[in-house]
Image (tube, rainbow, N blue to C red):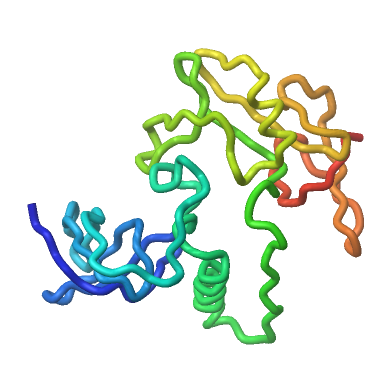
Length: 216
């Protein structure tokens, strides 16, 4: 087992912490924040970088908080639960600007969501042996969940009341009238409305990141 101690420099796209070993390699791993001193077990060595697993926090950032979600750290859906919303916004803005650095032109200002939780209008979970949940970081292992803090409360309510099949998946979607399990929905399209932008016709099983919608 190879253990290395170093300071975290940044947060990469997807929420991984980034630091440089004394030997010069860049290390990617989860669970730490910029400025924190860490001890990491190296689990994978590539030609240009290494991956690791956080073993110990030697110092903590003032932006570190206790995750609200009980699945944080195991679920790949929320990679910033261990930091403040302000720090999450800061690093997502940096990542966005880095993606666009080779494209000329003016940039629109960054618009953070007014709420960090309970905003998503869709939920899709995999089902195995009567359990429903998300796939883990290996994209194979099932992480059973009872609710998702990103989803609206109406979706979580109907999810908790829906029988879980032994195989397959369940897909839920919010509308202005409430929420529904998509396999029970007879409509092919949803009309999504964004104030100031108008209505958008979206396939019922499509993705549209807006909480307000209605079936038509």
